[in-house]
Image 1 (cartoon, rainbow, N blue to C red):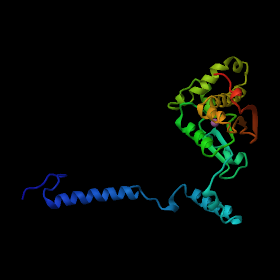
Image 2 (image 1 turned 180 degrees about the horizontal axis):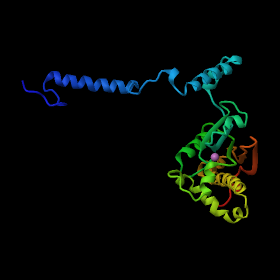
Image 3 (image 1 turned 180 degrees about the vertical axis):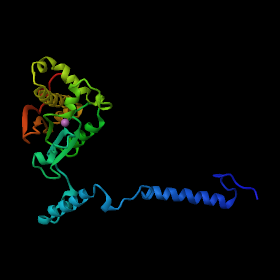
Image 4 (image 1 turned 90 degrees about the vertical axis):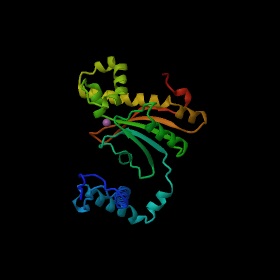
Length: 247
Ligand code: CO
């Protein structure tokens, strides 16, 4: 009998059936998610998070057993938060709001690009569907994204994302150069960055269309202090078309 080469398919009915069986099994495994290596829960390094979640869920329902059922039916936040992805600035917690009360978008250095479909989709949904009345751009002092932008170092892919801060830097460089202390200079740029993002937001069609419809909507600029946990209102508020700064 002639020996088959290794890996060669066997000809004939049985061979085809075998191939089909292997293929269908592979597809079934992929769809069932079983192609991933299953790790027993007790061995998972992120298992404590699941345990925390169980405890949190129990705490939330201990006084109001239907809490999650009611929350699942509807969300009606009045505020949209556009903040930094920094783990030290947990949006809901720092303003004392519960789930369902704050719509949130976060990215590195709380930037608003008019060409960013992610951010603009969140803003559009917040305005058209949720009818939020306030959009808060909240930066924070000591922001790593701002520090990276002010340095002359390259950080790879994020350099492109930080271009907007570099623009703010070049616009205000005369003012910023008067601040000798580097930490204070970064913090001032963090504030100016927030002001510029509010300005950009006010110039988008999504926001301006809402004002054309007389939909109540105010834009605010805040900054959060990592060292004291306090928010400072930067005093910029745009709530009408007439208040939109020129480009
Ligand atoms: Co940051």
